[in-house]
Every structure is written in structure tokens, then in C-alpha cells.
Image: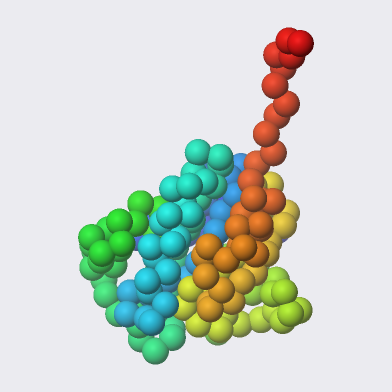
Length: 173
């Protein structure tokens, strides 16, 4: 089975891509929408991205229109909205389906992961979050109402970050 990092995706502009450029980083993958009551989470997601990006972390957004038609815009409209309203700099990929027959392959993997209550399966709504460890081996799931700065999300991000190598410099006493 391919890793999440090797799964084909398209950029928001429609170009063939993958998450391979993010290999070795911890990720917070989230299905996003521009017209949802949870859309203000973009602000906290961007803050989290900025705070941890230099430590090997990236938020990754996948727009999704499956929940109440709350992401109806074109790729250009989504990009413009995210940048101008919330200052989003983290990668946004193609609009995808996260549930059902046309579920994107990345979400076929993610939805097998259970949340803290032991429930796996379909994404419940916009802004469901998955923290993927830098080695891709550990995935932690958070439901939509869990805020990006919730202590449990921060703890999962911290645990998922690439392990820092011990300094090779001798310590001076």
C-alpha cells in the first residue's frame, strides 16, 4: 500500500501532485469549507502552521463541498478567499469528496482511523482534523468541533513532529 505521502493528489490549480514534498513533516490534514460556521477555524489553523512550520510541520487543506454545499467556489475563488480573509499560507489541494463512493484515496486511509471515543468511519462535517506523524505511521483524529488550538490537538502535533537529532557538539562544563 502506498503511504499518504505517495498518494496522487492535485493542487488547487489542478496540477498532478502528491504530498511527497511534505514527507518527513508532521501534517494536520483537514477538510475545509468557505461558507461553514466553522470556517473561522482557518485563522487558528494558519496560526498553528506558522508556529510549527520551522519544526517540520504543515497544515494541509482539502476543500470539500459534501456538507451542506458549503464549499461551492472555484479553485481560484477558494484560494482568494483563504488568502484575503484568513491569510492562509499552508498548502491547499484540490476539492475532494471525503465520504462515499468517490471518497479520495487519502480519505480512504484517514477514515479508517478512530477518534478518541473509538469511532472510525465517515467524516462528520467540515474541519475534521487528522494529525499524521512525520514518519507517517501514527494518525490521530479529531472531530470538527475540536478547535485547532485544543490542548489535545497541540499534544498530537508535538508528538508527531520529526524527532530532533541530538547535537553532536560536546557539552562544555
